[in-house]
Image: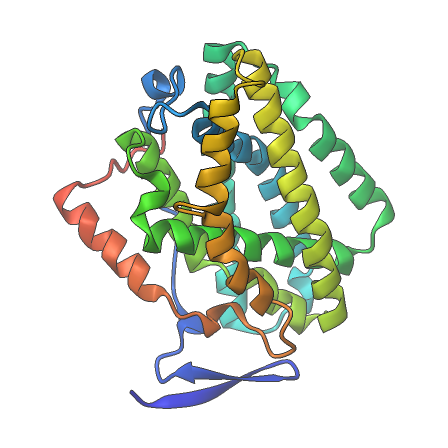
Length: 295
């Protein structure tokens, strides 16, 4: 296949002749019937695995609003029409994700008697501090780092179907839909960051900090859920969780090499050209079409 060079800021990146950086995308308006599943341990009847995904969902509504604000702050400084179009699509996709995960979280808390404000407390306070104390480019660097985390986890989930093996099909549908759209817009915040003068040092530091807080908040939420469900001290569940994260399928170990690649000076998200995952997912929808209702 012919290859060419694409210049972004001070970086030159090898791309295929049809650059994935020119990918066109838009939000898919979906609805998901997940209420019955959320009332149970929907991931293979495993309390830890279920709580792990539910705990991540708790972070998304506030996080995605922060991501949109961080990127759109720089709209007046972007003169690339392609990038402006992608920012608009990014904003639309993240807004849709925010709505769906807010519904997910509210429904989950109602069904299982969880305290939603308790899950959001730390994240809400930290973001209020960031808006107050951090310059806009540092907030954007944090968004770039979080978009990398979601992109590499989405890639692993879509490429290795064992991540959601034996999970409820409707909730799998929601997570895969989210993962596909995260894949489509994985470079948007990064390209805006480079366009406005973001540095390698800033994004490296942001990834270290945001990785710590992402997993700290997720694990905190897992503990709250397991405690509420009377399983916090279950050796069986923690052993199952350790196996899931680090042994088989070992999702955190599998994404670690991709996490490290972010520290390369010439890193760009589309160096991992995984557009085939989008195509494969879309082909699967032909035999199981998704609802077009926004829900």
